[in-house]
View 1 (cartoon, rainbow, N blue to C red):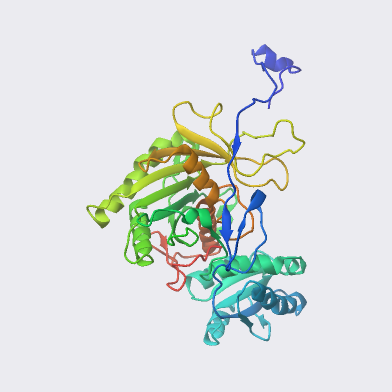
View 2 (view 1 turned 90 degrees about the horizontal axis):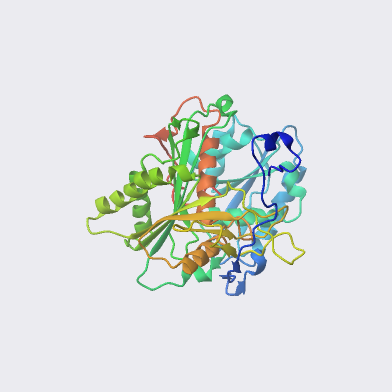
Length: 451
């Protein structure tokens, strides 16, 4: 904010502020959803909740703890070896741990994976002290092996609730479902819905030192009727600049979307979705028309090429977090509005379909609402219904027991794109990429490896 009352230089240019008072706008708080766990349900009040036994725990799970630390200190790893199976039982997961801690290094990773797989290990839990090991572990585990990996920092093991937090990721990563947002399941029996999240990440200023020169795009899509299970397709593409900005459109969207539809059908008795809702992240207002022309058209072509008479309703929404709008409740000592607060008038566009939604509880500082722009909608959503549906999706993020700042599929696409950036670190050749797509191991393709 520029305060011009005491800025003589600004006043010489005719700059001033008529009103320093915040704008008062009308808002409403959306109803909280309910979630179903293992045989019981609860209202998810104020954006956070207690995690009970998982709705669908993974079956018998054989695990091993691997130490990637210098020296011979395995104290924290041995604590994890005992504590994690106890936490797993509380959530309904039967976890059998390899008795001894395994020691490994970056150079020995391929042999470590091979030996553990021969023992029938399904999940390898790596204890780290630095960050250099992480990309090597994820690349070996997700591109060259069917064995899932979970990393944890050595110093983190001593913190409270670390085992509970690890179990949230582990169960979802291996095909389980931590909870189901009941309100997302209430649809007509003949209605099949697929929710899509899409994002593009670009190399940062220091990326060249790791060999990261291209952009990475990720598209995730739901494959279960409860909208809790997702698959991801990740690809790299050239970074194209137009003036000072970088193009955000996703190359090859037609092929990506076609493959996602086929995967959806594989998990739904060969049925295709009747409605598709896309939450697209990372797009500025100046690129709205371009994104629609390229990506929406590609999705529509993918549908018609898959089956000439297949025309699902598509809703295309851009999610923005890079703005300067903040909400403070009037007449309250609280600094943040309640989770579920939505504003769709006065500060929104007078002709277009957009709204602000604060879907999470502020932990520190002032909460920033997400700004949703509905660019295309042939599903004829009512504004209230779409806002409510979007808010419910913010409770479907299975890495934590709280609602998040924007819908789960958007978060997942962001995670998948950054996971691919880690795969590319320290790689001198591009054998992990074929036709610009990352060759994920078949044993993990339909799983949420990116969690």
